[in-house]
Amino acid sequence: MKTIIGDRSRILIYPCYLDINKSESLGRKVPKKYAVPSPKIEEIFRAAQQLNLDPMIEEKPHSSWWWEEASRVSVRKVASKRSILIMIARKIMEERRIKVGEK
Image 1 (tube, helix red, strand yellow):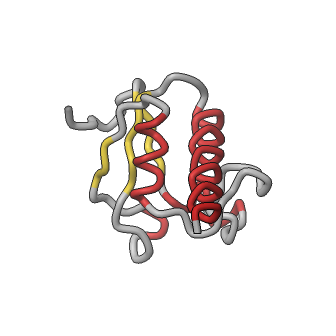
Image 2 (cartoon, rainbow, N blue to C red; image 1 turned 90 degrees about the horizontal axis):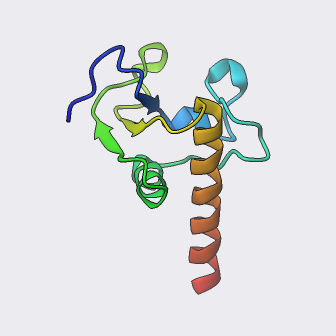
Image 3 (cartoon, rainbow, N blue to C red; image 1 turned 180 degrees about the vertical axis):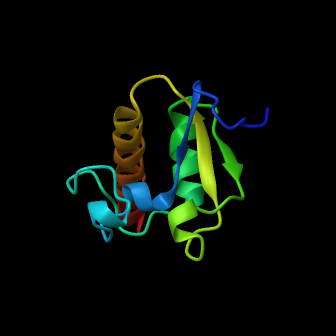
């Protein structure tokens, strides 16, 4: 299934949306308490998979920061975009805590 521009049943997620190192003017869309440092596409994809959001990685940069990011994740829209972003960010935080605890 390929994402079609204007498909309202899916939302696009770029790493900058979840990055604590970015300001809101540079693309962060979640409050800092939910943001994570330098989220990776693979982490976003895995978190979306665990949340059953039918994720797909697309090789398309963010139009405003075309030189920074080469990928985005498209997920099924099951709630508001902000809610989905927070769910994914929390899942990434949870996964990172587990990895740190395993060492």
